[in-house]
Length: 128
Image (cartoon, rainbow, N blue to C red; front, side):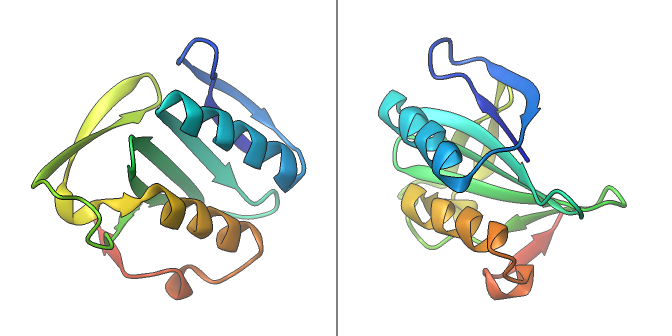
């Protein structure tokens, strides 16, 4: 299941969708062409939920579990700045540059998650 920014308006659409990965990939490609966006993905039968907010070439990946705990994926060194701003739903949020990932890496994390890879295999998570 997923929700994402609408490419036409740039506003977050909270209506959850079930689709193939190809449909999700198409939406993500549209958002990349727009230069920014926000995406939430969840495997249908379980928690957690992953979110990706990105602007330009830098993304931030967060994980929310069923108990309300939040973790952030440690960055890959892609951010050249100490502070980055990415969209989160219809707002913008600031994160440490240490949380910045390349958008390609963030997308690969989403795909691995949807293909049932364990979160610990996707990188180092920092509890917030």
